[in-house]
Image 1 (tube, helix red, strand yellow):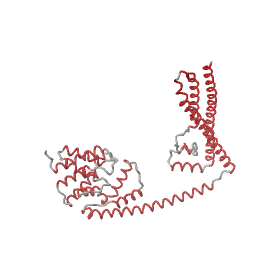
Image 2 (cartoon, helix red, strand yellow):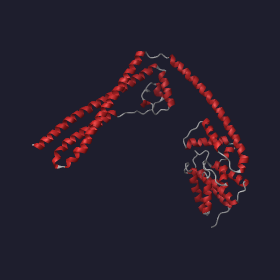
Image 3 (tube, rainbow, N blue to C red):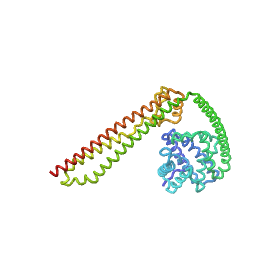
Image 4 (cartoon, rainbow, N blue to C red):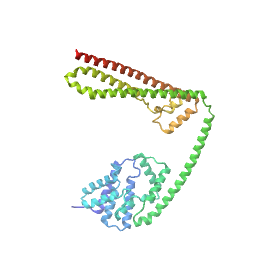
Length: 406
């Protein structure tokens, strides 16, 4: 088959990749984009010349360089595999042999950050892909990668954490080719020194900031200590009342569980012992009593469940609501979806306002009482239904048996 000339296929592949990147790659990819691809190809061209690579292998490496990150257009998680599929389709359209297609695909897979190169060509593309570690523009490129991770993978790193991760990556990375070891390794070490220096500065800045925050905390603590403490009698009243409410709620839940268990047992016995026997004509007189007993038990179970079913509110509040003293911060349902910083701020606002604090505690007791009232009303209704159900069921069974004997 006719094969396109060396320079022609490289020009065609370059135009093909550039057009795909411009038309289809998301702007969120601030690192794995056309600029990075061009840089990798340029470094491949330097390495193949310095390492005396054969023309066909040179062409394979450059083609792999152009396509190695094209998979980010469709799947960032498996971009090497997607890039391999892209170049396979492209090369088949341009009449490349399957053996060369396989070799070029393997070169793309070698750019995986955890992959250890197995031959000289894989070492070249691996070094070219990570050349930015030795670049004079390393910090700008690295910041682009941090921004990409934030936008695409939704992982946010502080400057200090990011610098520490880079140091870890530097310690695990190595250049493989002789040219890279000789010319790029020294520049990489300079960048590592710059990172270590920035870490030292960031830690010092963090330490100073923590000291300032500690001073603020101590100042706020002193302000709180100056606040007038609630009288002991008021504290005792709130504590005793809250304990009573809690115990009454536990008693209500216990009673509901008893009713649930008893009625579940009744239904189980009915389903296993009575209902299977109702098919017999001699037991037809038991159908209505059994149905009555089961229905009353089901109603009791539903009412018991309703009495114990929790009700949770939206879990959010606004600063305006805090300023207007409309939120009960002592009930978890009003804040469980809020960030910790917002809740801390709100609690401190409440603790510095004695009237707001007392009003909140009173509201908390009030709404606990409302919940208890609902529970005990439903429990009273459940016990009534259970009592009536037992009486009606017994009467129904008696009448059923009497009708059979007469």
